[in-house]
Amino acid sequence: MKNTFKPLITVMSVCAVIGLTACATQPTSSLAIQRENNQYQVTGIGKNKITAQNNAVKAAQNTCKRGTTPVVSNESTQYNGVVDESTGKIINQAGSIAGVFLGKDVNLSQDTDYNVTLDFYCK
Image (cartoon, rainbow, N blue to C red; front, top):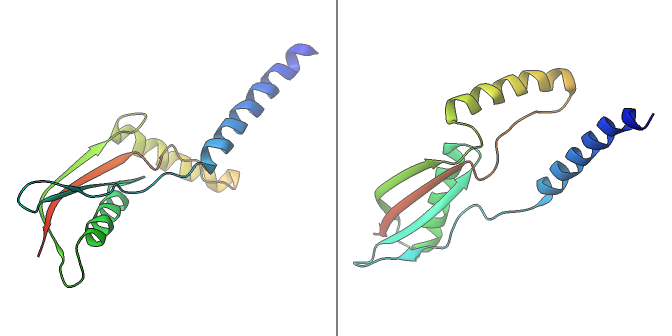
């Protein structure tokens, strides 16, 4: 009987770890770093590239004073997922389909999968 409870305890432990990490909040963007010649740099993070870009743009907009807007001079995107980007997309699509049957979205994406760094100035 002891061996029948071992898988159950393992599954419960994994669920507890996932549940605890899901509650942790993480900032979605960095504070602006000022470079020479009135240039700034911010980084936005997100589960996908669009979310990370939007978070970086919001941080850039918050940096510029009223009446000015950020003008991007350089943008770079970095993927930091658990598996490579194309495999992650396939797994997440399969997880979404499985989620229909399970009643819960199964997704490997994390809020830190994409980093978008913007170099900009305010005009």
